[in-house]
Image 1 (cartoon, rainbow, N blue to C red):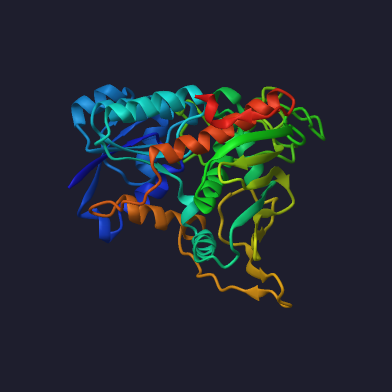
Image 2: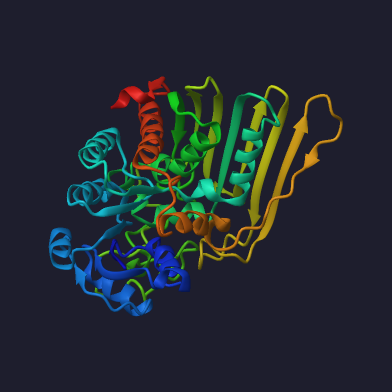
Length: 406
């Protein structure tokens, strides 16, 4: 039985914990420890999810004491690299939540660590490529239904429930995340690389903080909602989960969305050139009226249009990944020279992220694991694209050579 340690008492790790408790895995995998720098949060996590394991605030002490076979890293993005590298050098299998890291320097350090330890199982949890829609589009491209791919358009909308949630959390500080270009867009960049079977060579982009931060429409501002003097009147007051984030927790996810300390973009766009010659126009808005994405892939003989849009009450901030939403999902194939477009049936996904979570977890935790899981190098490629986009925005939109960042 594989002994697994959870590195980071995060909301994301609950998805891993949930699948490990399923009947098909519970006899082959066992959660044996938890690490986090926040003891209060670990206690809240253990109580809420009825997890009876020892807790550690020192990673090395945990590894020396517990000797886990695998670690699942879901800490603050800026710290992923530290624990991934330590696990590799200790010959411990490692699963890193996306993004694998946040900048080119960390990418090089992880690449070097993997080269020192090529035999160690190490994957990046890029689940988005395993959604039923993405897998269907991938199959259509590989079957040649649109011929050689020439261009791509990718538009991502985050509504004022999901998008705003990032600005209540540590993600809104550049030092912790390096921006949504890394934390959020690495999903999309990995999906692009997966669909196109290529990697980016050049990126240019521009972005701004259009809605959050000092764009405050009503002038209420504080540090954290629960201790703010305006909490009884502010329309953006947010009540976090006090069962998980106990009174002893160091961190609470109710940072003021109007804080002048926010230093990342909430709106950005890019043009990306891939090694295959494909050009992609890409944009993200983190303050949209509705949620979803639209992907268009133009080929020599046809065009694929994949649309996932979700409509919900953005004033209900209780669950950013709720399933009580109205979904508009369509996949259309336009064959050049044909009149009517074809509507392609897409299987309905079950579980988190429209079925993508179960898709990747089934590969990671299979015995033995599947051989077509996103690798450390896949994670590195997605991070390099995000880091290049941040650099381009910082330099006023200049073209960045992606592969030359390392």
